[in-house]
Length: 317
Image (cartoon, rainbow, N blue to C red; front, side, top):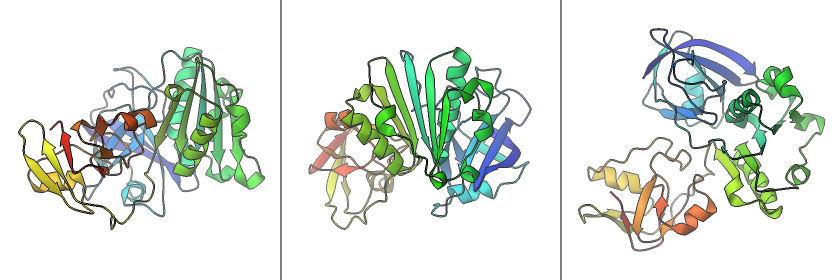
């Protein structure tokens, strides 16, 4: 859908907030906490950004707010966003949510690292509005890089939020925060890969049930050069057609070269857009979207980045 960038403002060092509105001023489709939209940028880039304003139902969402960090290692998305000016028209998807709040949670622990605060803020907004039990732990490098700090300082969030700055020697005590898992507690974490991995390892050590631990990566770990990758084949279950995948070539690229298109977006195994059912064979999972249990089941994969451990994969295509 078409939207207009109504407002762009600095909210921290190298972080801007972007407010998107409909072209005719009508309300935008509703969304739930943890949702994101795909933003189509000039030059053909498509990137996912979490919605960080208070969630609303259809008919009462005046705008979508995004928070975007200007990343010096950007593949073009963040620099493209920061180059936009107010009044620019953009095309975006409707909101999708791969990182939802659990309806059954009796208490929610929200952990944010850096720009990972964007979906966490929307979650805090939703939980505060519903009167639910929750706590927020927000880790940043320094006060100047703490986006939306003024919102967390407001009365409905302040007593539930702790903010930690590396520059002041303040670190979140993950062992203490995660010390008492229970069936009614749910953990949500978003931020840089290293931050998420640290939280997940502490949660595993504390014996959190995997189904109660939810994470969303903004980027996959740095990919290998593919030099050690072996070629394999993909069979399309619907037709029996077999397509060769070369070493260093993605499944999506190999299929596209033969006229078989798979919808995708991030190309890094982060967003889940290209999730595909596996009929037979053993995937070589290289995504950060599936959980360990989902990978072990080997009945689905993300072909934008993952490969095959078997000579052939049969996919539900």
